[in-house]
Length: 341
Image (cartoon, rainbow, N blue to C red):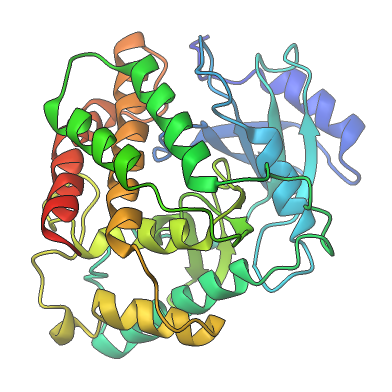
């Protein structure tokens, strides 16, 4: 049995004991996507489910937090943020070899290309507006009311995040990249003072982590909450806005060299303005810092993906090609830092 195969007999027995109404036997098929936590479709006599687990092998500290994913999606069950129904969290590694959770399967569309090439301009406009509304809804969640007031640490979010992702990058560093070093130095120098803003942040808010209704424009689920925490709302906004700057040829296709107006996709400035309107914000100071930080953070994440590929425990078969984006991403962050947003 390979490291990513599941012991379906043990899994079926566990789910029958812990998920009301579950009936085996169960078969499992691993989804091809997903850079961090391996994800599987489960087919059982009682219906379809999705299982998400920690990967096998040696892992970076605090990474692959499937228990946090389970907690936050369970808390959001009755909120304005759509999530699948959570069924069970298993913290017993002996069942399938690592911690996992099971949630309901949703039959929708996941789009991997920010230009949405299979859609018409009016559809793209509507879908980007839905994403914008979802981001505002997420940041307006009353964390105390949903039981997530303990979901993050107090203090300067960007100071903590810069420290964390610098450490994560160093732990997975395979060669010295001058663009990364220059970007880290800029971020340390330009770190804004804490303005006191704190909300639930997704941490990986982008198109391919959302599921849309089949053939439609409505978002039926926001997925992949591994990096979620209590933090600064501009982190999510700037992270998504990177896609306006990434080229369409990148391993994560962006909008940097496409005719957005002809496609019906708003400009970055329009998207930010609409978000500010929805949240009652006049303007966003230090936008260059937030963008540059987002490029560094994604570069650090993909360097971790690359290191796991070298170590043989990456979930995605395209891990090495994604890891090659580390240096170009850092260079784009440096460009923002040196020339402005």
